[in-house]
Length: 166
Image (cartoon, rainbow, N blue to C red):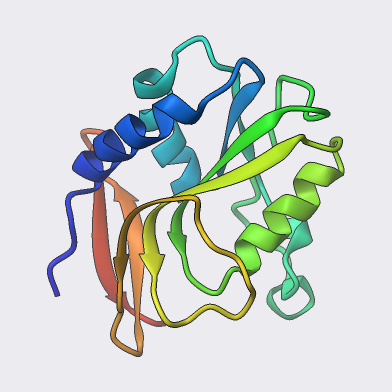
Protein backbone atom coordinates (compact mmCIF):
# COMPACT_ATOMS: atom_id res chain seq x y z
CA UNK A 1 0.00 0.00 0.00
CA UNK A 2 1.48 3.33 -1.05
CA UNK A 3 0.84 6.22 1.31
CA UNK A 4 0.86 9.84 0.15
CA UNK A 5 3.60 12.31 0.96
CA UNK A 6 2.71 13.94 4.31
CA UNK A 7 4.40 17.25 3.50
CA UNK A 8 2.53 17.55 0.19
CA UNK A 9 -0.78 16.77 1.94
CA UNK A 10 -0.15 19.53 4.47
CA UNK A 11 0.55 22.05 1.73
CA UNK A 12 -2.60 21.07 -0.19
CA UNK A 13 -4.70 21.22 2.98
CA UNK A 14 -3.41 24.71 3.81
CA UNK A 15 -4.63 25.98 0.44
CA UNK A 16 -8.09 24.53 1.12
CA UNK A 17 -8.36 25.70 4.75
CA UNK A 18 -6.95 29.25 4.41
CA UNK A 19 -10.08 30.85 2.84
CA UNK A 20 -12.22 29.56 5.73
CA UNK A 21 -10.22 31.17 8.54
CA UNK A 22 -11.71 34.05 10.51
CA UNK A 23 -10.28 36.73 12.78
CA UNK A 24 -11.29 34.45 15.69
CA UNK A 25 -9.51 31.35 14.34
CA UNK A 26 -6.94 29.50 16.42
CA UNK A 27 -5.00 26.36 15.58
CA UNK A 28 -4.81 23.43 18.04
CA UNK A 29 -2.76 20.29 17.37
CA UNK A 30 -3.48 17.03 19.17
CA UNK A 31 -0.39 15.32 20.59
CA UNK A 32 1.62 13.99 19.00
CA UNK A 33 1.11 13.70 15.26
CA UNK A 34 -1.50 16.44 15.20
CA UNK A 35 0.94 18.85 16.83
CA UNK A 36 3.54 18.05 14.17
CA UNK A 37 1.00 18.60 11.38
CA UNK A 38 -0.24 21.84 13.01
CA UNK A 39 3.36 23.12 13.28
CA UNK A 40 3.66 22.66 9.51
CA UNK A 41 0.23 24.16 8.75
CA UNK A 42 0.66 27.24 10.94
CA UNK A 43 3.09 29.25 8.75
CA UNK A 44 1.20 28.21 5.61
CA UNK A 45 -2.15 29.37 7.00
CA UNK A 46 -1.33 32.53 8.96
CA UNK A 47 1.86 32.93 11.01
CA UNK A 48 0.06 35.49 13.23
CA UNK A 49 -2.77 33.09 14.10
CA UNK A 50 -2.64 31.90 17.74
CA UNK A 51 -1.77 28.23 18.05
CA UNK A 52 -1.44 25.64 20.76
CA UNK A 53 -1.31 21.95 21.60
CA UNK A 54 -3.65 19.58 23.38
CA UNK A 55 -2.91 16.38 25.28
CA UNK A 56 -6.03 14.22 25.57
CA UNK A 57 -4.57 11.42 27.70
CA UNK A 58 -6.87 12.03 30.67
CA UNK A 59 -9.95 12.43 28.45
CA UNK A 60 -9.73 9.13 26.59
CA UNK A 61 -12.56 6.70 27.23
CA UNK A 62 -10.02 3.87 27.53
CA UNK A 63 -7.91 5.63 30.17
CA UNK A 64 -8.98 3.03 32.76
CA UNK A 65 -7.77 0.19 30.53
CA UNK A 66 -4.62 1.79 29.14
CA UNK A 67 -3.54 3.66 32.23
CA UNK A 68 -1.23 6.63 32.30
CA UNK A 69 1.28 6.78 29.45
CA UNK A 70 4.82 7.80 30.21
CA UNK A 71 4.67 10.31 27.34
CA UNK A 72 2.13 12.76 28.76
CA UNK A 73 2.73 16.21 27.31
CA UNK A 74 1.33 19.42 28.70
CA UNK A 75 -1.59 21.10 27.03
CA UNK A 76 -0.56 24.56 25.86
CA UNK A 77 -3.39 26.91 24.87
CA UNK A 78 -2.01 30.47 25.10
CA UNK A 79 -5.35 32.03 24.16
CA UNK A 80 -8.95 32.05 25.32
CA UNK A 81 -10.99 29.15 23.97
CA UNK A 82 -14.28 30.91 24.73
CA UNK A 83 -15.92 32.14 21.52
CA UNK A 84 -13.04 31.11 19.25
CA UNK A 85 -13.15 29.24 15.94
CA UNK A 86 -10.87 26.30 16.63
CA UNK A 87 -9.13 24.39 13.88
CA UNK A 88 -8.35 21.07 15.59
CA UNK A 89 -5.60 19.11 13.83
CA UNK A 90 -4.81 15.41 14.07
CA UNK A 91 -2.75 13.08 11.92
CA UNK A 92 -5.18 10.18 11.44
CA UNK A 93 -8.94 10.04 11.99
CA UNK A 94 -9.73 6.42 12.80
CA UNK A 95 -12.49 5.52 15.28
CA UNK A 96 -13.34 9.10 16.27
CA UNK A 97 -12.66 8.50 19.95
CA UNK A 98 -9.56 10.70 20.12
CA UNK A 99 -11.44 13.59 18.53
CA UNK A 100 -14.29 13.15 21.02
CA UNK A 101 -11.74 13.27 23.84
CA UNK A 102 -10.18 16.41 22.35
CA UNK A 103 -13.54 18.17 22.19
CA UNK A 104 -14.21 17.28 25.82
CA UNK A 105 -10.81 18.67 26.78
CA UNK A 106 -11.37 21.90 24.85
CA UNK A 107 -14.71 22.51 26.57
CA UNK A 108 -12.92 22.38 29.93
CA UNK A 109 -11.14 25.56 28.78
CA UNK A 110 -14.28 27.34 27.57
CA UNK A 111 -17.04 27.17 25.00
CA UNK A 112 -15.67 27.66 21.49
CA UNK A 113 -17.83 29.22 18.80
CA UNK A 114 -16.94 26.39 16.41
CA UNK A 115 -14.59 23.45 16.15
CA UNK A 116 -13.45 22.30 12.72
CA UNK A 117 -11.39 19.16 12.28
CA UNK A 118 -8.45 18.82 9.90
CA UNK A 119 -6.69 15.46 9.47
CA UNK A 120 -3.99 14.24 7.14
CA UNK A 121 -5.55 10.78 6.80
CA UNK A 122 -9.21 9.86 7.12
CA UNK A 123 -9.19 6.12 7.71
CA UNK A 124 -12.36 5.06 5.92
CA UNK A 125 -14.78 2.41 7.13
CA UNK A 126 -13.67 2.06 10.73
CA UNK A 127 -15.48 4.90 12.51
CA UNK A 128 -17.02 4.05 15.89
CA UNK A 129 -18.44 7.51 16.61
CA UNK A 130 -20.30 9.89 14.27
CA UNK A 131 -17.34 12.21 13.76
CA UNK A 132 -16.17 13.47 10.37
CA UNK A 133 -13.30 15.69 9.29
CA UNK A 134 -14.05 19.09 7.78
CA UNK A 135 -10.71 18.93 5.98
CA UNK A 136 -8.92 15.67 5.13
CA UNK A 137 -5.75 15.29 3.13
CA UNK A 138 -6.86 11.91 1.80
CA UNK A 139 -9.26 9.11 2.71
CA UNK A 140 -7.84 5.59 2.67
CA UNK A 141 -8.93 2.06 3.44
CA UNK A 142 -6.35 0.42 5.68
CA UNK A 143 -5.88 -3.35 5.77
CA UNK A 144 -7.00 -5.05 8.96
CA UNK A 145 -4.17 -5.44 11.45
CA UNK A 146 -2.44 -2.27 10.24
CA UNK A 147 -2.21 1.32 11.48
CA UNK A 148 -0.96 4.48 9.84
CA UNK A 149 1.55 6.47 11.89
CA UNK A 150 2.94 9.92 11.24
CA UNK A 151 6.65 9.86 11.92
CA UNK A 152 9.01 12.78 12.39
CA UNK A 153 12.34 11.98 10.79
CA UNK A 154 15.74 13.07 12.13
CA UNK A 155 15.91 16.03 9.73
CA UNK A 156 12.43 17.12 10.88
CA UNK A 157 10.43 15.99 7.86
CA UNK A 158 7.14 14.19 8.32
CA UNK A 159 6.37 10.82 6.76
CA UNK A 160 3.38 8.48 6.87
CA UNK A 161 4.10 4.81 7.58
CA UNK A 162 1.95 1.69 7.56
CA UNK A 163 2.75 -0.44 10.62
CA UNK A 164 1.48 -3.69 12.10
CA UNK A 165 -0.86 -3.39 15.09
CA UNK A 166 1.14 -4.23 18.20
